[in-house]
Image 1 (cartoon, helix red, strand yellow):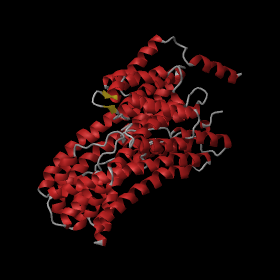
Image 2 (spheres, chains in turn brown, purple; image 1 turned 90 degrees about the horizontal axis):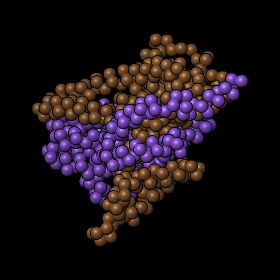
Image 3 (cartoon, helix red, strand yellow; image 1 turned 30 degrees about the horizontal axis):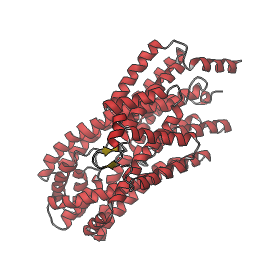
Image 4 (cartoon, one colour; image 1 turned 135 degrees about the vertical axis):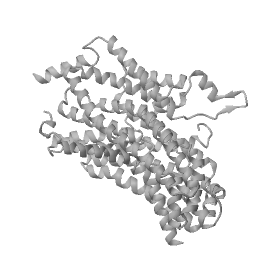
Length: 280
Length: 259
C-alpha cells in the first residue's frame, strides 16, 4: 500500500544536501510572488525534490499521488524566506510521514500546519531581519559610506547575510528533524488524527486573523457629513468587508466556479468598484 | 550612454533578484544599489554618498505583508545614476527617486497580478504530469519576468532620460492607481478562500471566526492569535474526550480496510 517503503533512507551526506536545498529554495521563494497565492509556487518549488523522491517510482498510482502532492502545495503561502526554511523542513517530514502511512494521515493537515506556522514566523522573521538586523547593518553602513568608505555597503551586507544564513540553515534542519521525531511519537501513541484536528483549528484561527489584518478593503461611501458607511459597518463589527469578500470567494469556490474565472472576477471587481467609489 | 545604460540595467537586475532569489539579503538596499551604480559609472565616492542619504530615507520602509511599497531598487538606481551623470547632489536625486519608486510600485502590482495566472498554468502542467514545467513557472519564468522588467525599466530611463520617467508618472491618472490597488487587495481574499477550502468544515467554522474577531476587535497581531490558538488547542486537548473527534470515523474506515 504505502509508496514510501521502497524509498531508501537518506545518508548523512544526502541529508546535508537536503538542508542546503532548503536554504536555496527558501531564499528563492519569491521568484513568482503573486497576489493570489503569494509564495505558493515558491513553496511548491521548495518541496518538489522531496515529493519527486517519494513518488519517483513511475507507477501510474504513484504518479496520481505525486500530482496530488504537487497541487497540495499550490495553496496560499507567505512567510519570511529565512524562517520559511523551518516550515519547509517540517512539511518535508510530514510529506514523508504521509507517504509512509497514507491511511492514518490526513494530507489536509499539512496545509493546516503550514498556515499556522507562516503567520507567526513571518511576524518574527520580518521584525528580526527587516527590522533589527537591517537597521543595525545599515545604520553602521551609512556612517562609513558618508565618508566615502566602501566598507559601508560591504559591512552592511555581511551583517545582513551571516545571521540570515545561519537561521535558514538551522531552521530547515531543525524543522525536518523535529518534525520527524514528533510525528513518530504521534503515530506511536495513536493520536495522529486528534493532533491533526487540533492543528487545523490553529490553522483556521490564524487564517481568520490574517483576513482581519492583511486585506484591508474599506468603503469611502458616505452621504453628506453625517453618514459614513464605513463607520456604520465598523459599529456592527470591524473588518466586515474583508470577511465578506473572503466568503464571497469561498462561496464561488464551493459553487465550482473555476479559479481562472474567479481571478478575472477579482481584477474586474477592482477595476469597476474603485472608480465607482464603492470600495478602496 | 548605451553601455552605461546596459550596465545599470544589470545593477537593477541584481537589485530585484535579491528579493526574488536571495531571500532579501539586503543587496536591494539603496546603500548597496547606489554603490554598484557608482562602480558602474566610475564614481564610487559619489555613489556611496548618495546611497547613504537615500538609505536614510528608505530604511524605515520594510516590505511587510501584501501591500507593495515604493520600489527601492528602481528608485535608488535611477536616482543615483541621475545624480552622477548630471552632476547634481543627493537632494536632487531624491526628487527623482520618489516618482520612479512609485512608478515601479505600480508596475509591480501589475506584474504580480499577471503572475497569478501562473497558478492555473502550473496546475494544468501538473495534471499533464509535466512537473518540471510546473516548477519552471516559478524558478525560470517568474525570475525572468522580474529581471526583464527591471532591466528594461532601468535601461530605458537611463537611456532616454529621467524627465521622461517623471512625465510618465505624472500622466497616470489617480483612478488607475486606486483601481489597481483595490484589485491587489481583493486577490489575497481569494488566496485565503483557496486555503480555507481544504480545511474548513461546518464544525470548524467557529475557529476561523474566532481568529477573525479577535483580530478585528482587539487588533491582535497574527502571531498573538497563533499563540492563543495553540493555548486554546492545548485546553481543548484536555477537555475533549479522548478517542473522540475525527478519530472514531477514521478508525472505522481503517478497520474495514484491514479486514
